[in-house]
Amino acid sequence: KAGVTQTPRYLIKTRGQQVTLSCSPISGHRSVSWYQQTPGQGLQFLFEYFSETQRNKGNFPGRFSGRQFSNSRSEMNVSTLELGDSALYLCASSFTPAPTDTQYFGPGTRLTVL
Amino acid sequence: GDSVTQMEGPVTLSEEAFLTINCTYTATGYPSLFWYVQYPGEGLQLLLKATKADDKGSNKGFEATYRKETTSFHLEKGSVQVSDSAVYFCALSDQRGYSTLTFGKGTMLLVSP
Image (cartoon, rainbow over the protein chains, first blue to last red):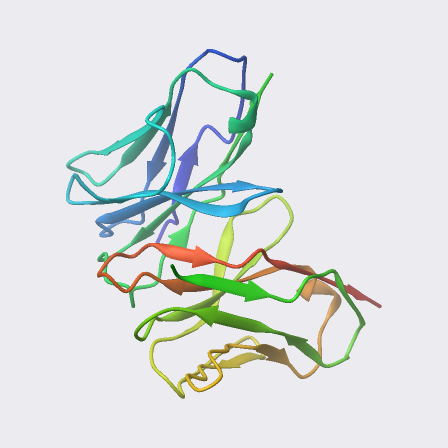
């Protein structure tokens, strides 16, 4: 079974631009979560989606948004990029959004903002 | 709110040494607990998990026991290998019915031959 895939793997943008990251979950998984990983703040939760609905959102500004499609694929968008948005963005999928269900992570998208 | 505290690294060991990485948590109720591992340039891989008190998770020689009384989930391995060099993250699940994970800061393990 194929794992979680994220595209693109690497991105370089400049301040003020916007970016869209994509995540394809494991086949059959309907829950998708996004995390931001930085050296300073570690791993921080961004969003959780299930059946095209955002169920939970982390403490990030409104510049960060996301959505989930009917095939469970998910995208996240960051508008008006800032230098501090440089990070590894990780997507995770699970069969259900139950707290006991294992989340499987993709390789991440490395975003660099210049 | 929920939080996870891990011992700071790096932890430097020789091959075949015994490994312990401490993890304690703060949460109301009974969260599920996880250990994830991240190899250089990669995403996170689930190493093991425990969903209720006194459960022991195990995988690839690693073990951790869910201790409710001490709010701990320490990771152990009897004999580490060079290939175990990675960053290890302890995490707990949200208890409000979400799959949100709260992570510790991570502990880097370096194993030398």
